[in-house]
Image (cartoon, rainbow, N blue to C red; front, side, top):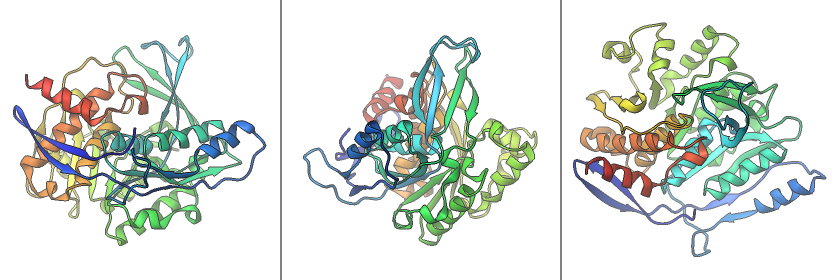
Amino acid sequence: MALQATTTFCFSGPTFRSTPHSFTSKRRISIKATSTSSSTLSNSRSNLKGRALSSDGSSTQESPYVLCFGEMLIDFVPTTSGLSLADAPAFKKAPGGAPANVAVGIARLGGSSAFIGKVGEDEFGYMLANILKDNNVNNEGMRFDPGARTALAFVTLTSEGEREFMFYRNPSADMLLEESELDFDLIKKAKIFHYGSISLITEPCKSAHIAAAKAAKEAGVILSYDPNLRLPLWPSPDNAREEILSIWETADIIKISEEEIVFLTKGEDPYDDNVVRKLFHPKLKLLLVTEGPEGCRYYTKDFSGRVHGLKVDVVDTTGAGDAFVAGILSQLANDLSLLQDEERLREALMFANACGALTVKVRGAIPALPTKEAVHEALLKAVV
């Protein structure tokens, strides 16, 4: 999908307002890796050389981008829903990892994004790097570890499309990203720096995460945080809660789910605004609570409310929250004044809700992320 001029669609009632923006980005692709004798990997590396080009073959210009930090991995999703891992007849390989999903989601929507993270110097790792490049995500911040494998996750799906995870990380390459490997120029030039909590679980990645966020904050970059709770990866629930909250007050934008509210507040009612407001720290600009098909709630210092979602047939909920995040960050990267304008923020959140809804109709995360044209069409159909 080539980068091109795009339109941001703002939904308000039966019509759309559109404001043209130029989404062009100077995308240098550089790969840090040691040599290998594998001809397959050599071919993969050669495909990653050079700059990302616009549709006419010329180098693109710089534009505000969302930089996503964290894990990228391979999800293996059963081809048949409602079965255990042992009973599943086959699995579909799908690229994933929440921060990478968001980066691709933004690019699919016509926005500009980049990714920082580490994968194994293996076929899966180079495949993932190529997937980012093919989706116009700047991958110059990716690193390759010759001594660790790319992370894998087997994802079971219930008959309702809900997920259970089994991870293979012992350790995986994403856990081994070091502060010295960070591209600080890429970090400081971002408009928004987005991350989760999985990168806080172990060292050295935890220190790299904290250093990257600190550099972004000092450079005036907006910090966006989606805890993306995955309890099986943490030593204990208490450790997960402590670490997730340890960086809470540095974020400018936070997106959480109902289940995460229950976890972080030790069982309090996620539908009680007073409970949610406890998670709103003084410097926070926007707190978002996703509620699946019901849509989302939003909280700022000045206003709060709910935006209803789209009803669709659920196949796989993997990546739905990431698609939602991509939808709202793609809007905010172009115009942060949305945070002060409730009507326009609601329009942007309706767009984000549609991104999440379309994603659950397809198996896998990255393969399911929608284009802005698909989101536009879904919103138009919703009001006919």
